[in-house]
Length: 232
Image (cartoon, rainbow, N blue to C red; front, side, top):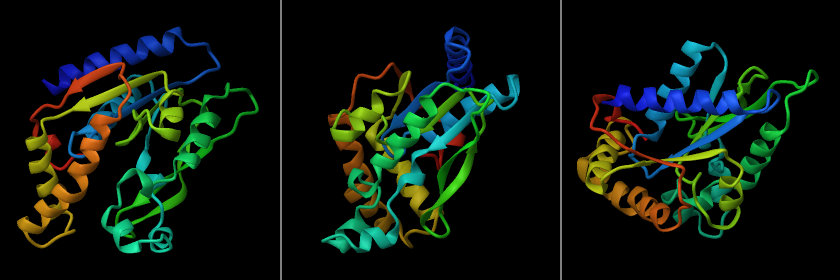
């Protein structure tokens, strides 16, 4: 079932690129609540596109725009900031918007590789200029929780994409995935602690997304696939 979904998305994206001006890029966002499987889906689409046409696509995770732990510690309520890491206020949407605007500019013979930050899960902080976006990569798939919001600056970012894809998932399924993910990542030691983290942060963020999202171009139903077990 998942392979059929990927095939449909790859075909649709290839048509978008074929219809786009030669010097432009196609920018797609893949958003969803925590535990929806958006990261897995975005990665599969990009991998399939590159298998058909090497280096035509790149995936850019929103994780690189997490505020650093030092920045969270400098907030008025550092305990809350660290506990709620992953909420919209713990990201830097201004910097993300600047990147998207740079990538929307036409590609010229003088265009150079553009770099985006990644996120080091071992260090628990972003890594600057870690993702190289080549001039050949004309399909850029951004993925992250808040890329289809309509609030404040997030809405300005959402408006820059050619398409907004939203991965929907039942709340109970997302909760089970999040508990399993937190345990597998070693973020907590017990299932009870993992459930508390999911209930008090991840699912709260997910509810906020549902309440404040734009109308997406496509809604993709998350499937119960083994590859989704620890996905975002």
